[in-house]
Length: 351
Image 1 (cartoon, rainbow, N blue to C red):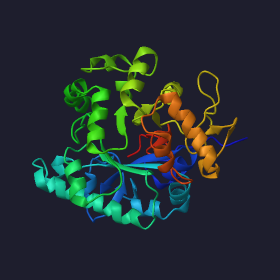
Image 2 (cartoon, one colour):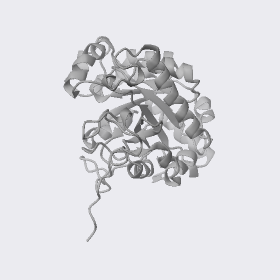
Image 3 (tube, rainbow, N blue to C red):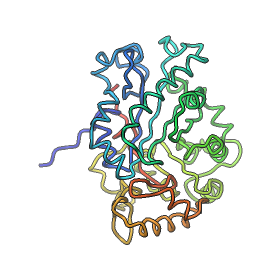
């Protein structure tokens, strides 16, 4: 009798090591402890109601792991370095009531705070000599882009929009973000990210699926039909990392040429609702010549043929030569659709 898979705590070292090997990469959140350690944690408070930034790394042990403990695991760093896996790092700003990072006033102190986090991330990953195109840093904070410039961050970066505040309930956060959501269609957001030099756009599935997609001003898009044709024409291959994507929508997202952030990591999910086999590594172990071949084991000609077919299918804007130049055995072009483990193996109720 087989044991039932137990989902690890979100953002834990265990979850991220599992997720990066099961999928094409992982996404996780970082906060800064009171004693200056980067912590793998999403919410701004613990289950006890304490602000993360006011607790030491030792006090946070029951709730979150340290980033440097994750980087000490070869089962995490080797796929990142050698197999073309993607790592999306979200920086979380402190709750204003914590008094950290400028509190409610923010301003230059918030920029300094975020900039210090960026420099810490940069220092932590610098020893791994990571390939270009495997790492992206992003944040909801409006001060993020000035902080990136101040910190001298050289890896790809992107802004999360519409902005979700670090305070208030989930419903209040969404209500405050609604005007920005309505004002920015997905094609418009893509143009903004291209202007900022981002390699991709992280976006909510609300832009693509459900009734809310019709609320945006400008061109509304979708995962199927005319809406998909509009999206394909507008983005010209500009990558979108979509969240949250449930198994029911996974095939539609991938078939639209987009990347899916998933909370469904159970090995028991072997097939999609339509009965087709679930492919959890469409980028790092793509289907080629009728079989799944690890990207880092494909020949250069094989990768070129694969990219040529994908470029034609989704009408990518970059030339085949540009795509080949931005790829290698340990690097996959951003355009290739992926499945990314959200917080490693998905959200949990544990904080």
